[in-house]
Image (cartoon, rainbow, N blue to C red):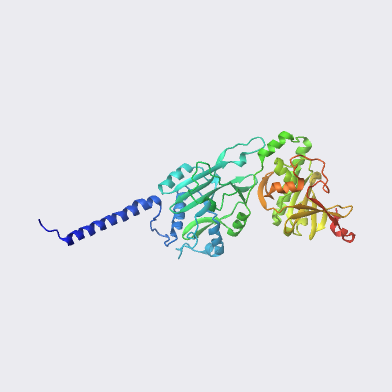
Length: 461
């Protein structure tokens, strides 16, 4: 029997191992990696480096939505924060290749874009194309609050969020809807029971924990890391909006239950008053917004929104709150220019300031200024004939957006605590006889204005 040459055997084994290794590399590169979205072709303008996977996922997503003519814009707070620092340079930069991947390669789990609902309707084709490109996707729906009202709680569901996952990165697409107050709204991200809660780290999402309200942004097309993308023209303003964007819906279900116990006043006087009060509130909102003064629905107007989703017809006025830190001397002349003369001015900027303006047809606008202490917030009241001072204490609160009489306005986020502080535990029961000096649950006597100050702190017109 011929003796086998050991060197030949070793050479054959080495060759076989090499062929098998090459086959494995080929199989991974051209099948598994493409299937999982882990490898991307090097095309003109591509980025490379240890953090380039995020950039490649964003590029692929932009190609996906471009192929379906879907206009999206970047709202990712991390990237916009970086962009804002270099906004002038980015605006003036040419379309030449970027020397480094500075923005889209930043460490993060998601990249967030926004979509205006009315600009796109054909999602089935998008999902099919996304799957062919290697994306996994998730669609989150919930009921459309725009269809709710006193007569009907529709329950009709609409898309609120989409998530497209590829490799180790995900795109969060937030759907914005236009609402009657001429602003944009996005809904919460609430997973249904059957959904995979490990699909992505949902707790790290920047949008979706709460509904949000935004002004319609002016957009700017720029080149970021060699990718053409639309961004809010003023990123810093958008980021500021985002930090205070939480939105509360009117509680129509509770309002309907309230009216079953206490039928609504549908008299001609009540209808007419609500019409006038709505008009007055629109003028007040426009005036304060133009001045840049943040305000919220207060007292009876806040109670009407929270309890019955409407203006209380027997209240006979409109009540707004403003933090004293936001006071501006231009407020009085601005309202006078808007056709609302000053009716009275009580207190002073340092203590218990209150302004009242006369709207048309005996509907009054009261603006109460709030002062912050270590553990509470308060506003003051003054009795004109005696100079007595009163103080109304509230637990500290933050501000949320809501929609009221076709306006985007603020209310205290902690509305129940705010209303209970003012109206007590029986706030659900209508009270037509109300004494501002003794009826509120949170009123305290606060001394008397010195007589020599009356000309300044008690002004009636």
